[in-house]
Image (tube, rainbow, N blue to C red):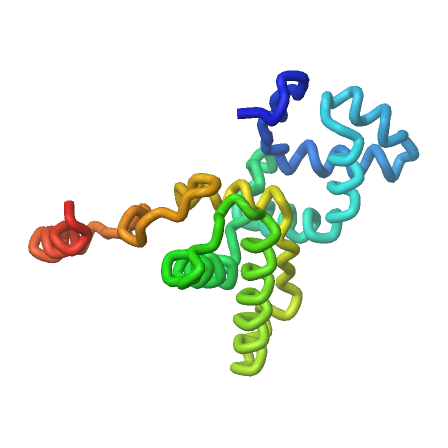
Length: 189
């Protein structure tokens, strides 16, 4: 799983409670050093810097959270942009339908195409007046690439058949059993 025997596994991401984030910001404003806070909370110093850099966003979330409920111990999680979903779906189509059959292990080829598609989608959305994508940013990082490969079950160096991708259906409680069987029949299961 790792490229060399000397590499250590990466630490798992862990969520930080809103109350802890607010405490970090308060401690920084009181003059405590990043390093001291990081050691006390057992988190990397870069996490402390990131939290402080996002303090305005955290304050807005805290205000909304306080208004909705007085429990400030909720963990904040972010949802993916719909623009990202569209981009990844178009990228998958490109991978499956490309006459060259691109090598999915080539990070730079996949990233460049993803950036191109994202740029096209963002420009189109802005032309249609969608202001929500103005601040949207996609860098095509290696982390995104790894998650993309895992999310769509793509294996490095192999381009799967189009039908090999996982299909997810959102079936709500109001969907009749007749409609559900149609969906199952359509998906081949």
